[in-house]
Length: 370
Image (cartoon, rainbow, N blue to C red; front, side, top):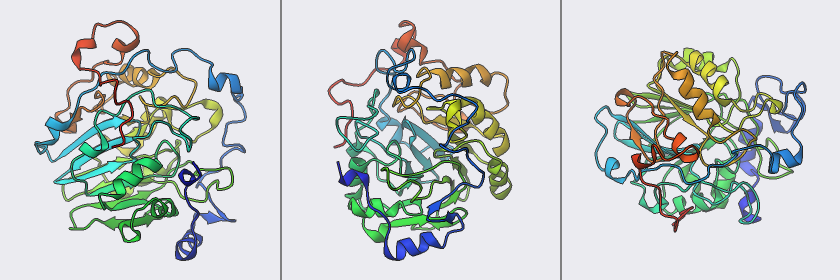
């Protein structure tokens, strides 16, 4: 458990952190002021009972529909760009011959403990060992639902490059990733992956960091832009709604796919998460691009019903110009060829009308690491 907390930056890594414009008075900060306690003071905070057990339909009654993506991954995407949502913020992105994995979490809990903390209610649709060869792993920040100790240790055996935010490399190195395979970026810094065909840039986000009580904001949080010669993709990580989305759009231009977090939101927490309504506002600022929602369907991290983000977005889709991608877990989709979204989540709690659309996963492997 102690090792899962990670490591603090030291030496040259700490010197580089201290040189960042975002590092003020011994911690990273946001571009815009956040209310004390990371919340909107006009909205009451939930009680401990409400957070732990309150609210209806916080988790689904049965496993979500899912497909195994292995067959799709054996064929290159016709358009050159394809995304496979694997749960929460974990996406396998195929972009013009390259494969990158975002915020990979295969662990049973979003927690340093195997016994306590938010427990996964939905299996990953593919075992970690069954992933195809990867060109990079991208880590937006160090919270437990985005940076999983056990998952990183397994991926370190592949000797794949990791691209992440300033300071997060200390955790990775402590868990077995070779230092030369770790790239840490400040906002607006870029890294060209080996071979030169893919560039990753860290962009602003509004959030916070830390894996323990004593290291709040000791590492940076970022959104990420992934670019090839033909395609450009935006990955939000965790973030609230700010004017920086317009700045990102002006800096990069048109996106071929935008992935924005939509789950685990609460008004009393302030602008640290988007939620579905603010995600649509952020999407407008980022431009007319296909939208793949992330940060949902895996962990219970807030008080809203588990399917509320999907319902809000599905209802809004008919009124908007942006193509909405709402694939099932493990369903590989190409943004330019994506089918019209279907409310597959309704079969889980509201009857079996759609239950035959896709098989559920075996109960024997609810959180595969090996």
